Image (tube, rainbow, N blue to C red; front, side, top):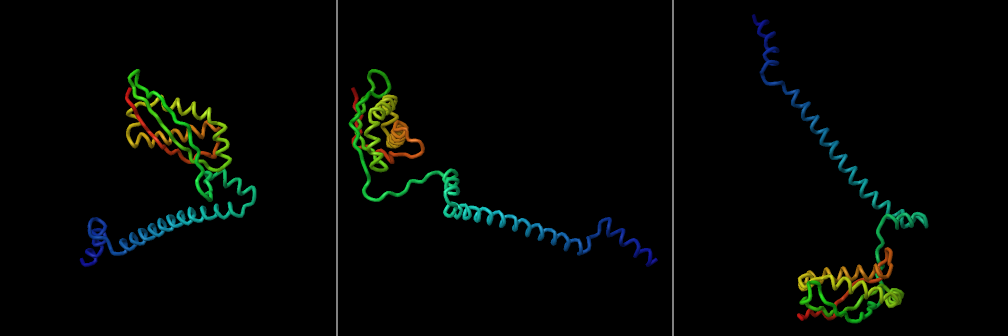
Length: 189
């Protein structure tokens, strides 16, 4: 009878009794192996990204004319820090009627453009009629609400800078670094 009980124990263990400790060890080993693989994959990805950026910088530095040209195409052009005082050019004042009908207020605006270099200043003067026309069209399309707040003035400065650079047919290089308002008056009619 003792032999019968011993034969039934394995069946009872398979049916619902707790599993032997060997199964838990296998599960722990599988989990640890998976964690190690995940950590290795994340580490490999991080190393690839880090070394890939470092390698690209080294290739651009030592790559010669062809490598430098390829690196310039991939990375956006960065302006080199110029030495000396900034170059400003005063723009004649603008007086325009703002958008909004016959009783809309008038805007009187004086500004200066900060330019990249002396060559940009020469081009800026040459393109002045085209620049003034584009800026007048922009200003006259604005309402008092568009330009009265500080946020509106900041947006307007960015739009004027973009228009000036576009008017000068500047492809990728932006000869106008910034636009500075020296007088900004909104007057009711």
